[in-house]
Each structure stands twice: as C-alpha cells, then as structure tokens.
Image (cartoon, rainbow, N blue to C red; front, side, top):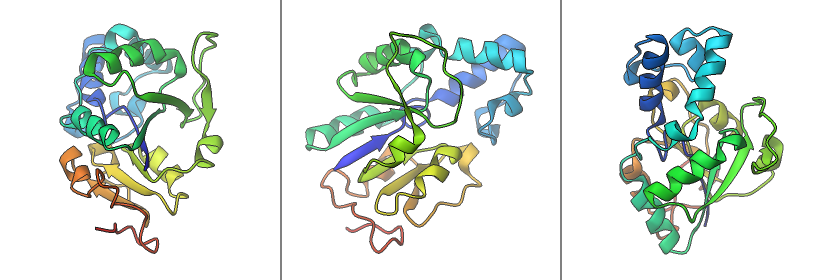
Length: 215
C-alpha cells in the first residue's frame, strides 16, 4: 500500500508545544484541550505582526526538534515500512522548515522516510534555493494513496475527493466539529489506526465508498 502520513499532531505533539510557545512569547495561555480552532491566530488572539513572529519562531530548527513524538507513531511507521508498505510523510509545513523537520525525523528514528512538502493551505513560502520543492495542492490530489492520515480540517476537506482512499481523521480538539466524508473514519490514536489491520493491507480499498474497511 501507499500511505500518506501528516507530521504535525499525527506524528508529533505539535499543538502542545505551540501552546507553550504562545504563552512564553506573548503571555497567551490556552490549554491544549481548548484549541478548538485550527487558525492559531484566532486561538491565541494574535496581531498580524505577532503571528508573523510566532510562526517564525515555531518553524525554527531548535523549536521543531523539541517536539515530543505522538505516542505509538514512530513504532507504527516502522512496522508499516517493515511490512513492505510505501510510507510517505506529507506535510503542510513550509519547505523552508526542512532542516528542523529532517533533524526531528532523524532524532526520533524516522530519518529514512520520504518527506513531501505540500502547499495545503495557500500560505506564502519564503524563497530558499536550498529548500525542497513545495508541491501544489492540485498536484497532490492528482496522486493516488491507498491510505491517508491527517488531522487538519482544511486538509481533510481537500481529501474528500479521494473516493478510493481510506482517510483516517486523527482525533484532535480542532477537528471535533469536522464531519468525516464517506471515505473517512475517525481514529483516536495510533493503536486505533493499526487495529484497522493496516500492517496486512486489509484496510483497503474503501468498500463501495461507504467509509467502512475490509477486514
């Protein structure tokens, strides 16, 4: 199987760290469980200039490499790769964050996985001739994956067009109001994902487009 796996809040506990960063930089205290809006500028009530500084700090290598891995994520990806599946890390981070991203992947034991940087959100990316190419969203959606794992309501909305892809909605506070499409199922953690028999490849394809998996 070809598997798409997001990084932030799927492989790493990004939001926990970003809550700490907002408090440290601006005194904005918001508990992780209360991050109900994917738009962090609204969540932390930041001005445009504060948001610019915040994102600059958030994508600095020293911050990216400090994230804790999501429980079970690293072991699960290694199991999937060992079983012969093609696992591709697909992130909406700007490609200029590639150094910190790669350093974190190597730190947690995932440095040998392919990483694709995708413009999931239409955000400007500063020029950097050394950075990997940012793949346009339309180009990503023209590709085929058997399985995709993401938490972002914005990204998930785009993935609704993948009718033959099993899309796992990784449960987070900011996607609680998102209603999974027919090709999707909500999962609470990595143990829940593996319970769908991904290792054996039995989770795919989507059965008659109804969002249930073959077992």
